[in-house]
Amino acid sequence: MLAIYLAAAFIGKLPSGMIGALGSILVLGALFDEIWNKTPIVKDFLGGGAIVAIFAGGLMVYFKALPEETLKNINTFMTSGGFLDFYIAALICGSIFGMNRNFLIKAFLKYLPLILASTLMALVLVAIGGLIIGYSIKQAILYIGLPIMGGGAGAVPLSKIFGNALNEDPAQIISVMLPAVSLGNAVAIIAAGLLNIVGNKFPSLSGAGRLLVGQDLSEVQEGGNDKISLKSVGIGIAISCAFFTFGLILSKFIPIHNYALMIISVAIIKALNLIPEKYSAICSEWYKIVAGNFTPALLVGIGVAYLDISALIGALSIRYVILVILTVIGAILGAGIAGKFLGFYPIEAAITGGLCMANMGGTGDVAVLSACHRMGLMPFAQVSSRIGGAFIILLATAILNFFA
Image (cartoon, rainbow, N blue to C red; front, side):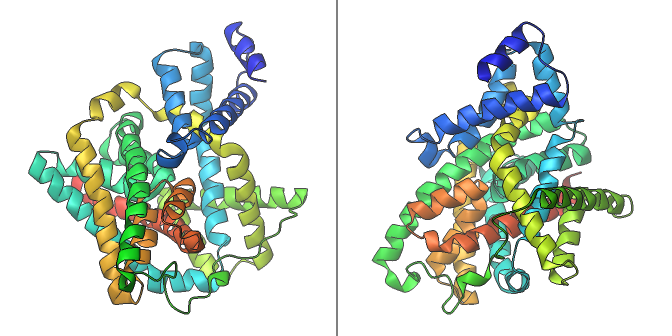
């Protein structure tokens, strides 16, 4: 298939529109995912195929590895073609509707302060660090602190939100954000291993894998439907697209980004039990289909459409790396200290509420929890990735008022 798409591209016969764009990035994404998810060091510390796919997409543009018309077609498909919005719509509906309603409410009441403390400490430390080493506080918070705490998927919507608010090119913004996300993920994985050592040396700080005594892990996720029907796929598409459109309607009257408004509306409807459980399960299963099939392709497309390698090279520096490390340290301290007061074990709180906020989402969660031998905390890591990622988008929208 790769040979077919490459041949078509170089002889000028690659179909325009979705067939050429989606087909080619599906194959390229699968290739990068397969190779780099099995490559030592890259798979353990740098996010595996996910981060490679993004950078590979950007490098194809930088070195003009594919004909200009092919790259332009992929760019159009990702931006004005709406593929990115389609994916994000499935992500938001599937991740929130797929949660157990009771746990969703409990998470906001009990776990959200942990995420808030983690984020606050991370942003304070990166701002102070930026001030000390001569790095702009605005850049330290917006382009390093928030993208790291928003996880891998957060950089893309944040770049679009910042671009609209600050009248800057989203491609330039994401080129500064992505190195922070990648480095933050690597630092978070290493930090998880160190926290495991601390927990073993000081048992009073650790629950040996338990975050909160008495918490029933089985209530986090809905059962779902492993045998989703073809009709259900259509229902999932319809619901996710409708809520994305609803977010756009709300944005006409409320000065908040439509992604954030969609998140709020979906969470409220789920919390108030206004959607039948079978449709919640359908949305959850639809997102699994989207994530399982389209994520590598999406990442290649993001690299082509949004990653500016020239800007990325200019962004990297010793100061940049220091600020990334400070962000992760702040996440650990904020979650660990707050966890102690909220009745959580500090080590587990720092891992789930801190490191699982600072890593690259789902792949980062697996790597972090594997590094500290606490895979049983995955449900709470998902809360950080889902609710925490949504919270960062909302927080970023508010923070922009101080810098716009």
